[in-house]
Length: 497
Ligand SMILES: *[C@@H]1O[C@H](CO)[C@@H](O)[C@H](O)[C@H]1NC(C)=O
Ligand SMILES: *[C@@H]1O[C@H](CO)[C@@H](O)[C@H](O)[C@H]1NC(C)=O
Ligand SMILES: *[C@@H]1O[C@H](CO)[C@@H](O)[C@H](O)[C@H]1NC(C)=O
Image 1 (cartoon, rainbow, N blue to C red):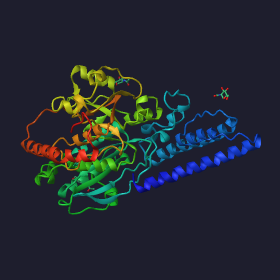
Image 2: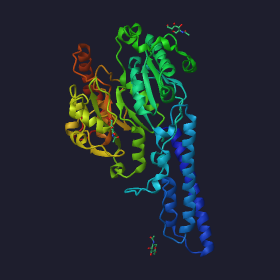
Image 3: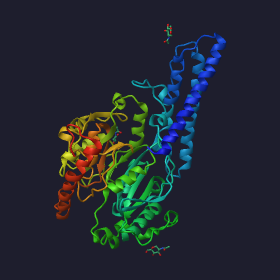
Image 4: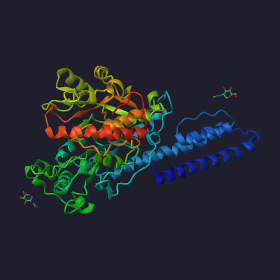
């Protein structure tokens, strides 16, 4: 936590405490006048909790009940109003084509909580349930190890609060950008993408971004923030200012640069035999997300539709005991592949049919099933689809799942990806998996949500260069990284990289 956010929280806390003290004094001043004796501290406590949690119902058993209830209702009443107001400005702030309330799904939920019967804690507004600080989308340049990073180089136009939606954070070079539109069609929420753009790959990367923003779906400029990065040994010839990239019109009849063999056949990265620094991209995209919750994923994995709003509704409902366990937690998505003649299924019912007919299979079943096998996956596949989203099962990265590389919805408090690992060397998510295990994370598997790899089932292809790099990476992990992780995070029985 940065000093600024700490100060921010300290300030907020002191304001809340001040308000409480003031109310306390007011209330008791009233009661002295009434009977002059009733000075029990218990009466003030629910008010404090009420302010912090913002819960709608309070229970006070004292002679002050009515006065306090009146005040408490006032406080929550104005909170609710603010909540609704933000959502209206949210959709007005966004440009045409997207209804902010649609992907956020908060209007109808903000008030609903009063009627539902909470099992564990009172239902509260989504804003209070998430509890976070907003972040800036201002473009900035910075060095990061051996890399130059253009953070928020091309920011999304929609302004979102940290609590109101989820960001899909991902990485790639420009040849992966054909995935962006199909991804957005299903996700319909912010995307933060870090693009590797060394040397002469920089210009086609810029052209691809311009092409997507000018010639494709309006969702791209509304919801996608592009960050660019390259090694300091491979700086491009020109790096134009952000505004120029944002304002320039692209000639759409030139087509998409990633579909143009003139560029792709002689990519700078390939000619210079550069490795793909996958984890630099993952971390840049993740730490730049402006929302509290994020789905750090690979761009070829398309989520089931309406995942952001369904997930946040589950968080707001607060009706599942597993959500309140003290362990740190992430929300895991099951992953599938479909054959190239099929479209990705739009819901679990459709997915189940495809699994039965064999047009869909669990992800990497043919490559590395132990990396992606999810606990209770058989039961998951057999369970019929239900309304909304819930935790299906709580798993651990131990036993048969000790090498699991889960993809999950988490936050920026979760461990990072080791930037020394490359895509070519494989095992790039294993060290994070180990850290999650040692920190005793709960892996909350979601019941009705899933990811589908872009159509086409992967089969094993021999690649000698990758085999050599994989062997080198394995040595790096076992000889250097693992001893380091043991110092930094300690050890726990059953955990392995
Ligand atoms: C309030 O307290 C009185 C006695 O102190 C008790 O009889 C009554 O049931 C309590 N009411 C509630 C709502 O807890
Ligand atoms: C756009 O590109 C096409 C095809 O290369 C070309 O014929 C046309 O003149 C260009 N238009 C503009 C405005 O540059
Ligand atoms: C799932 O999708 C299918 C179309 O593939 C649709 O017919 C069905 O109504 C959907 N089911 C639910 C529960 O939304």
